[in-house]
Image (cartoon, rainbow, N blue to C red; front, top):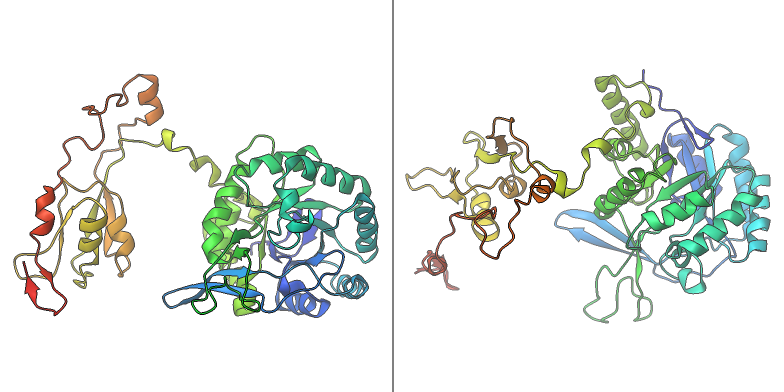
Length: 452
């Protein structure tokens, strides 16, 4: 049976599934309920000088039938008195001593950092997470992402905290920055024990068409919020990769955050080097019970692959992540349509003809199955992505695997295209219909009648 327990920078947890600092960790009641459901840790909703929140606070982007494909909030740190939070934290850590109860903190001065660190340590916190990511409200006061976007200030505050803390410190980074490695290096140079990322992305998810205010609307007005949920997962994984590939940061434990809601998401983050994961939006959407599916799926994956702990496969994807210039230009795949699975919807034809390389032909023999024009197909994969039937369109390798050449190799040997109409260009000689052909296709006018 796989062992899911972790030791994250000295913070022990029965599994890598943690709740992120957010509304689901706003109280001891919620944290205890989560632990009882199977979560291994929780980062308490950020503590600091109590604030005042607005109403409403949340908005979302929906995609077709998917609710909350992206989630936005303008909620601030805890608005509850610090005394209440500390009292509940003491009870949680007493009842669940083997779980990872981590205090997220955000204050202003060095004196405040020293004071609040002592208080959460006395309350039994197993670790501290420094919130340098909040992109609204707090950043306007010189905290949150205002620090996360300033590596010099971040380094100074982390140094303050490391001097004052006797428990492990996690530095949470803001994604609202061009190079995530800059604050990552600053945190490591300040001797942080670990890093977590990403916090939410500065965003406006939509405009109300009656009030003309951004969502969520507050008395006819709005502001930018912090964007999270499934939509941000690709951005978060890229930033995780950037840190774990950096020579100065790669050995620092990282807690991965952003769009995680099932076991596969968890596995992907671990494969990129995270050794704990934090979840917020999915818990708000589906409840704490989602952790059971995460646990079952992770154990099944590990059993099938022969892994005993998550450390056996942590970072295994990193060697396969390289720069574009190092990819094999000789690798050649073409689309293939499984006629037994095809439902004749023509989405592949439409997508390829309008958005790609005109490499799919509609049938002319009375059948319903389109065909691939192999000499036109560049293996872009668009057709398989739009196809509504799983495994109906697959990409089949056509080269024999013996040739390998990259853009970097071509550059080094001075063989890359270097004139405007260079014969060495990748698309040289590729068939494209003459422009006038676009006006010769049969189409429907607004009445529905066919016209040419």
